Every structure is written in structure tokens, then in C-alpha cells.
Length: 401
Image (cartoon, rainbow, N blue to C red; front, side, top):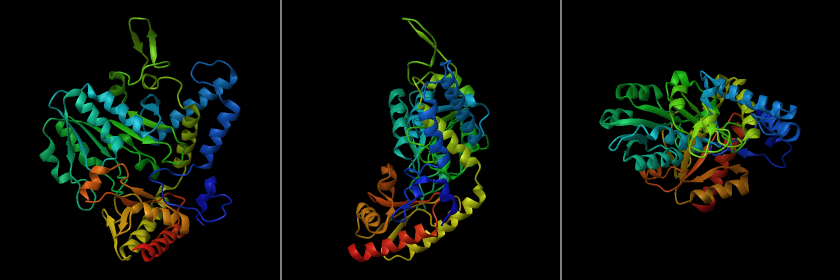
């Protein structure tokens, strides 16, 4: 058994093996994050930022420590560059709101056909509000951004908003190429890191992006919490997204002035327990040997891809190589609906997958399908999980195909 499972309570004392391969949707919570959440909710539950009693001061200190953990995880310059959100979706909506005032009628937001809807719909709304338009980077047959087409798309591009890693094909974006494009065009670069954050710490300074969003529940923390990182000068120059308590400097009946970042973007009581638990999850992540875990993931991905390629009637979507990708693999069995595959694998084999369009309908259209089965790896997966998947698929194919 993979020893890292000891850090995940979900694998304790099960009556049957848990082959959890739906990590691209939500990972399991690590023990340090769960312990931190329980500790806050039982010993320190109180509001943060203004309380002067001891419990509130402990909570405020833990909340500040969580922001510092996120800063370190991202290699950000300042803790004030870290905005806590409810997840990547709110982070990307906030990013679209922050940047929309930079758009003029006729300007272009460059997205891609790989995008999750949470990095597509907010930009559609921003474009509608400002009279701008969206343009999409095409996707190769191998499920990667066709960056050879960038020069054709450059006219009037002001914002480039793309995934750091695809939630369907697992392809990791060549951010350096996009950074060069943005330098040449003057565009700002926004990255959706929801998938990439689960695979080790991020270096936003090395990436050269302007905004970066990710979710806690995909990187071994709780649900309902996420992070939007932004360059401080960008955050400081932009208006708030939501109004309410804690994001103001001064309020009277006529107008309000706003607090500096990050508080300007954290209206109301924040998800305190979630933030503290996320900080613990990020600390856990930073303590791992990601070179070893990356090798482990690639080996499991090879095992999975080879097994799927040998399965009659199985079509794999995206590049079947293991370089510049995360352990996310989408496929379908001929004449078997993705939902049927997932239900049978769960009920008969204890294998948990995701079936559907994965909130990526433009990509499904590109691949001429409506739904795929998706298997996605995490550090606690091992060869038994992959073998259970492949054996289960063979049984499903015999039963239904």
C-alpha cells in the first residue's frame, strides 16, 4: 500500500478498497488540514481581524499564518498578494472583474478551447459588459494548445486567460511561450491553476503571470476555499468585486473608500476555518518530495495509458505521452455511455471516476463527443488503483459493449 495514504483519513478502516480516481474534481483531505479545521471549529471558533479576546486573537493569527502559507506555496512576494476566495471559480470571476476596466470596445480576450467553464464564462460576461470579444487558441489533436497559431490571434489582445493544466487531457501549458506573447502584445496573463496546484508548489514569479487562481478542495484541503494571487500593483489599482464589511476604509451615506489588498477583495466574514485548513494542506504539500511523487505519477500514468490503449474499443483523448502533463486521462468505451461506465466501476469494482463533459463543452465539441470518462491521479494512488480501473473496464466492456 502507498505509505502516503497514512496522511489521508479517507483510507482508514475501510470495508473494501477505496480506488479514488476522481481527484481532478475533488481530492481527499489530508490529516493536517482536517486536524486544523477541527481545532479551529472546536477550540478557536470566532471571527477574525477585530476580536480582542484570546480566542479571536488565536484565530486571527492562524488566519494570517494561512495567508503566509499560500504566499510561500506560490512563491509570491507579499502575503497581501494572496486573496482568499471560495474557490477557483470565484477567483477567476474576481480576476475578470479586476481587469474588465482595462478593456475598450473591440478589444480581445484570448482564451482557449481547453478551458473549464469557470475560465470561460466570466470572460464572456466581461467582454459583453465592455464591448470586447473572445478569441480562442485552438487545440491540437493531442489535446494541447496550438501555440503555433498565436501570431494569427494577436491583434488587439489585452488579456490572455488560460488553464495551467487541462482538466480533460492533462496537458500542461507552455506558460513561457505565452509570457513571451504577452510581453510582445502588452497583454496581461491570467492562469487557472485549479488542476496544477494539486501537483506541487507553484512559482508565480518564474511563471511571469499577473493573476493565478486555484481551489483548496483539489489540493488536499477543504471545500469552499481557494486563492486568487495577483501582483500587488494590479490588485491595488483595481476596484473591489463585492461590497460589505471588512473591505472598506471609511463609509458614509454618500460614498465609501476601500481597504488595501487583500482585504478589498474579502468582503464579509471570510471562510476562516477553510482558510486555516488550506494553509495546513499547503504546508503539507510543501513538505513533500515532489520529484519522487512526480515520478510515481508518471509511472502510474504510463501503466494506465498502456492498459487503456490495449483495451478493445477504447479511445483516449489527448496526448498519450507522459511529458508535460499531469495524471489526468480522459477516454471512452465504444458504444458505452460514460455515466454507465462510472456507475458500474463504482458499484462492482470500487473504482471512482468522473463521467461527463467536465465543464469543458467547447473541448468536447472539438473532439466530436459529448462525454468522456476521466481518471485522475493523486499522490495517494498506487498500482492497485490503476489495475482495478483496467480490470473493471474489461469487465464493463464484456458486459455492455
